[in-house]
Image 1 (cartoon, rainbow, N blue to C red):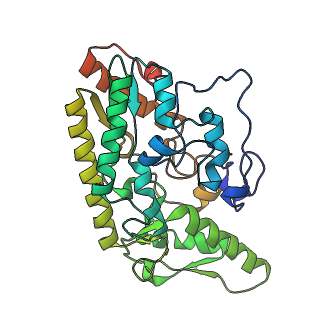
Image 2 (image 1 turned 180 degrees about the vertical axis):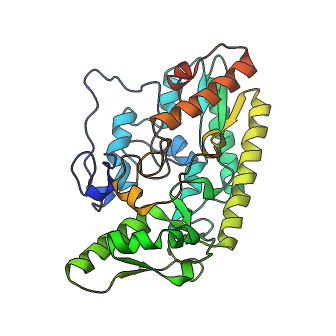
Amino acid sequence: SPFKAPLALGIRESGEPVTTPDNLLGCALNEPGVSLPTANVAVNAARTIHALTTTPENTTDAGNKGLYARVLPPNTTQVMAMQLQRPALVSVEFGANEILGVRSGAVIPGVTYVPFPAWRPIYDEVTAKARLASSGGGVLVGLIADAGEFPAFRTGAEFWADRVMLLAAFHVQVDANCDQNTDLQLVPVKIPTAVANGLARRNLQLPPYPLSCAPGPRGTQDLVLDAGERRIVEGLLREMNAYIKRRATQLGWAYFELEALYGLPNLKPPFSSLALMQSMTPYGNYISLDGFHPSALGQSVLAQAAAQALNARYGMHLSALQALAMPR
């Protein structure tokens, strides 16, 4: 279940606390009348390899096990489910989940991200199967250009600029190491954790909770991406994007990038801890309450980019609304 706004409530739409471990979260049944597979076989957190190998029965992702069964028929992978539908058009979006593990602050090849040489042949296989299954072509989706574009990331300097509000409203003392700090800080964990601890300390008449922006030792889950770690991530993004675009050319397919949304100059509003905790749109209008994935409005921006790419490649006359409904 998605988070419930405002984030200060600390619950999901289901009423479950946001601190509930993923493997203990409920997974609601599909709506009546749903016949699997549907036109959309995307699965949250799935990497490219999972599209080829993972079924509801063999998934090792305890937090996602229920979801696989809501999207895929028994003993069926995402690629198999796509093939079963004999699609006229296919949209393939993979690669982001190969990198998202670095949001913990640990940038470790083969652990928190998939190195490019290991990912490329798997992506080739998925896209080759998609091309064989599709009777009318498709579109490949590239990634973002910079991890700092995610509204879930803010710099330490932005925390410092909000230090008066953090102290007054939430009893959180921003450390001086945040001043002029350009490292990326993971907002969805650092700020709600600091707020919860700060308010608890206030109730106990204890000193404010200290919020540090300093990175820990390399390879630790410190919730910070320093300059060196950020360069590694951005280098991988460039390499993957260039390859996805090249692969689209090889297949003769359309291509667009998630950058169409995440590169918007107005995507991230000025950082405010008060807005983060109390607003109905804590990460702005385009991003959902996890700070990473698009909201409905954000999806419409990507749909428009998809429609434009398909119109340019195939001479279609798709609208953004039609693009939202296309198979994935």
